[in-house]
Image 1: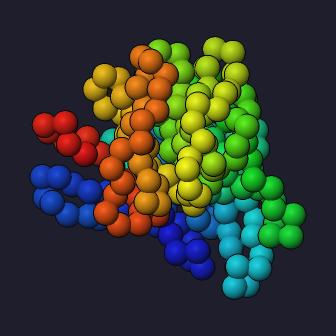
Image 2 (image 1 turned 90 degrees about the horizontal axis):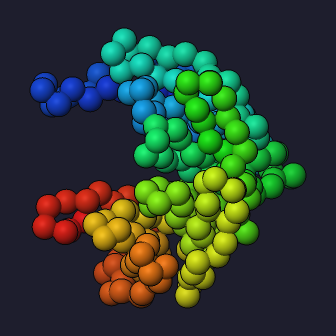
Length: 231
């Protein structure tokens, strides 16, 4: 992470010492994209963007880097197929990482992306994996474990079949959401939340159910599964 007017910064947390320590920053320009764990234990950071001149000047990059937790070192990966800022990424159960959405281009020619691509560490390669019907910036992605990915995009939740790259709208939100959170729960079920609304997705029956909303507006929120079925 980094303030938009500074270069990237990286820290490592030592759970034994309960402390953070600065390490060499990733070899990126501007604000780094999302990070996701690969099946080989390395971490993929995909995309970057610079914002300057009070937000008037924006540039996005297709760069990708790999972090090795054993050596606290960075290495360049093959670039993505598209430059992305504000994208989302998630680990897939087969060890690959999927990257979706984001924005590309300058402020005057900004485009919001609907595409997805998957990184395979063995081949060091990004492969385009299909297009959603809705775009997203900092959306949420979940591997349902049945060959499908659930993506919380702008305006709707969509299902992407990994083998075919075909996406379909599964649920349109009742209200606008500027950002989204999602969490995979037993069942398998998926909790999707953002703004002041929340839904539960039943992966077996492909059905959504509105549930009691958060008590406060949530923007750029995160969730993690806890004991007793709580999050």
